[in-house]
Image (cartoon, helix red, strand yellow):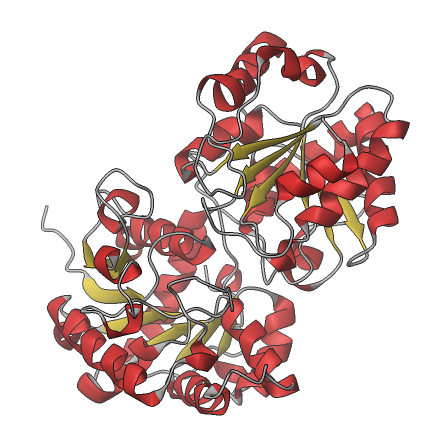
Length: 473
């Protein structure tokens, strides 16, 4: 049988693998060939082979063209290195990735020049389409060097948060904020389609970025149905899992930033032996995630728990945090039922979710919340904030609980209800499983994306009413 020729798309990501957008790139790239598209990934990379921040490791098995930032990360001026380190949408003191609003025009031009060469080496000039994740200097590089290749932009949310901060009045030291706001809007307006993470973003992004609403497409994050599924484990197996992650192979870290600097003894695992539900948080230790609020809410709620219900914080890139470090809040509250499990590979997450009973995401500015979908795909109900993406994913009273933003008391009340009412928690988990698998599996979303690509390459306008990948299957 003759193989069907595939069109080529170059997917560009300026950042090294560490957040949700890298997961999106990986899973879409794995699924796109079945939709008739061969993806090449041009992206940043940090550290040696074997680390999840290393692009060749993270995107293993895919056609990836990494840009090594390892030397730049420790250079006196990371943006003056060759290649220059990527900037950030977040302003974190001492971090090598300086916030975009403080990146001057000279450094901007270095970034653009470097990425023209990186995209060229990845075959952008011969590609049928460019799919550029986030609004970054990759867009300018594509515009200058490959104007004949149509572009799809993918707005993952963090850039919109920074743009909103600029519009509302940026910090005084963001001397180049205005220039970056103008660039980001211009880049979005030049894309044939702009993919966003939620229906809320579909409504808000056109005004924020000045793009034609007809070009905006809801592209929800999804999950790998083979990796994320229910895998019931015995009580002994669950305890063994947490012993391995917390005692035998600790990766939790304190203010020193050293993985493993927070380790537990077998005696400290008594809350896991009590037979109550295990709660998990998964994500980075950034300000918007509101981890301190979650810890304080858990400390208040545990007095009303009928059985101990340990809370495991899974994630936090080593050495990277904003505001109060979670361990400091644990010590302040005296809540010794909170455990720091540290950063794990994404392939480890299904095992962690299957050793738990409830996912809690207190983030107040989550544009989507991929981990909510992944947890639901493993049969876990969720507690999330009633705002942005989570409000579109979690059906309060059916697949989980929604609480007001920054409401510690409401979070504590939801924790108590979820922990103490086993039957209701199970009912919501069962429905969450069904909803996730029906709506958010990556292969189906990739097929929808393939249709969008086909439209763009053919020069067709957006299909009437087709503002979501799920409607284009």
